[in-house]
Image (cartoon, rainbow, N blue to C red; front, side, top):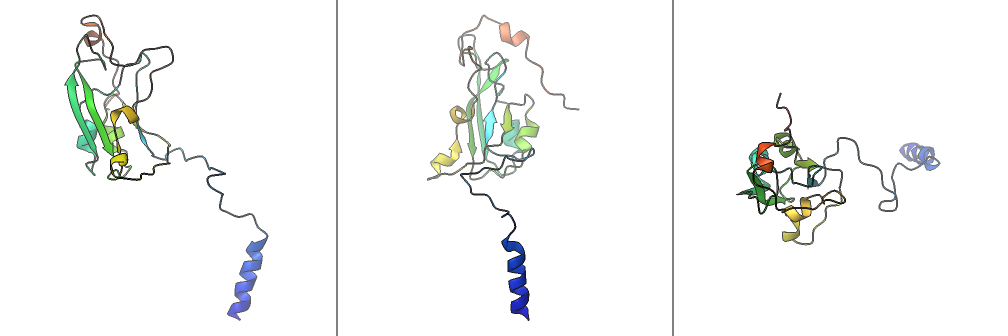
Length: 164
């Protein structure tokens, strides 16, 4: 009796479309709320949004983020304001993709994007550096560091997100 019921179930699903897709030939678009690989964003003028405050590292429950800040100068300006992230590293083997770093960032510099292809052949490749995370500058604009006039960016820091 159980054998007949098993064959009936098999025949029932035999002529239906399969629920699986043939990855990597076919890819399903990620869901809207999917949290994948991190990215460091830039302002429209090409300066980096990260100000080296280390709030993302403090918010990370897995201790996967390490930030070392340095002072901006007029000869080498990376971000608006006084500081920038000299070193920014994320250990993707420790990251649990919770998004707390994204929530803690006052300038919305760190964003979890939809990239899901994260494979490593050794542990060192799993540590993403600032150079790997930072978005390229907008087309036609110079990247960082850049030389600026004294006091230009310390007077007008772009708006930070409202904490309320």
